[in-house]
Length: 93
Image (cartoon, rainbow, N blue to C red; front, side):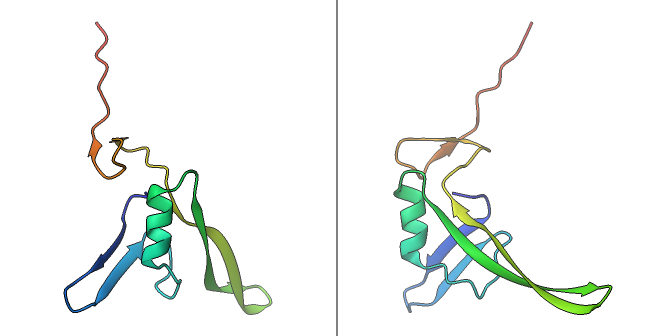
């Protein structure tokens, strides 16, 4: 899973979810997080809307980007797809 992506619920059913670079109004559900975490080569596309000042005036821009993917390069992912360990350091003599 992407770094800085999470989905959490408490005992009252309150949901807190986030993904770096994805606007809060994007519809990222628990099923989507689970599909990306346990699926093979799964990604979820999201649409971010931005307002930009162009030479001709203010304009809105819709940007499609990958919101969630199952590639994690910062650590080694174990077979349970949850536990991570640091990459092995290679010391050259």
